[in-house]
Length: 318
Image (cartoon, rainbow, N blue to C red; front, side, top):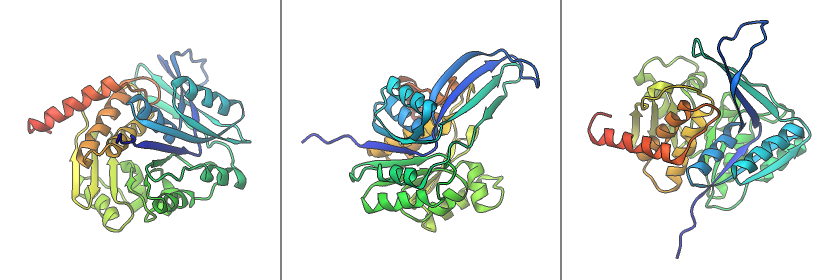
């Protein structure tokens, strides 16, 4: 019997159309002439679905979007060939802007709040989550205005009841409210973890202690903390694993965390060990930051990065 490949469903309540461009210098009040413009469908779960698709995985992007920008986002996903289900809303989907200053290498990111969702709209979005038990569900991104902070907790409970693996990447009160409700994998950044625990975590020992505490307190089965250029740590009942990020020239950090999560979840869905999945995530993140645009990766580039990471680990220098 042929085994059905695992499908990764992503759930994005506050997606965006992402515009990225470059200018020699960014100065106040001056007309800034830009070049190297890119436009991508964006928002946490949308980016995860795009990367899963690029890596050859089965995916479905469920997202709430409305008005002309929402239809544009939907068209961009169709153009990319990503299977999708749009939950129509009355509000206008947000547009995010990222500008890269060539002279300094700085990146400026402007991220609007997004639309307000009605009770009926967010209930419809919640009902759009599939009930099939073989699915991984990745809920990712900020919440739109008027959506209750407990909605990710409710989605996690639904997934747990259906036998699904639930993955969460969010921040603030929505993150705090979801802890302990059946999360398989939680992915905060270091800053998000510091906000969650209420203190700075300046050294590896403190970071690892807090990540492991979340697992042992039942907040999530696994916690992976992304550390930017320093790599990532993965906490589970087996303990804590720390991996260094592979060297990469940084062009844009937009969507790099989403690329990391997509590759890691895809590897887990395919049966990889957590430490192996972590290397897939680091490989995809390195490819994403080396490109221009939001979470733009290719399967061949990620596979090369992953092979290099594994070779380095086998040589004892990881």
